[in-house]
Length: 137
Image 1: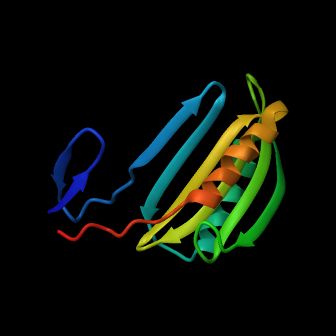
Image 2 (image 1 turned 90 degrees about the horizontal axis):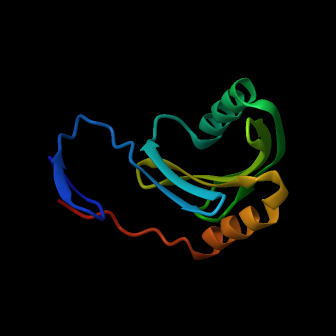
Image 3 (image 1 turned 45 degrees about the vertical axis):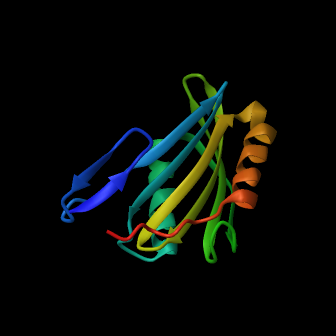
């Protein structure tokens, strides 16, 4: 068993289980989500599959940009896109990156008319992200 530490507690988890934990934060109408998944394929293939899923599942989907970056980790892929929801158009800025044995995603999301605020939150993440070493059991 590996011991997990979260803000509220710690608990043992059998190693056969995949860690699919995520963190979500909200301030007014801007959301931030950090997701981690076991790495199952190379990052570009993973991102391509995500974009295909977005195109199928999001109304009026438009990919604004997809670029490679050395932040938050070398080989990261940054995406910006927009789509329609019942509440109006949304704008997302994503960073997909590999960290240790995980594929991670950071997304800042907000109303399309507040894209500059979403971008500010996203850029602050890119500038301040520092990976911490995994705790050894």
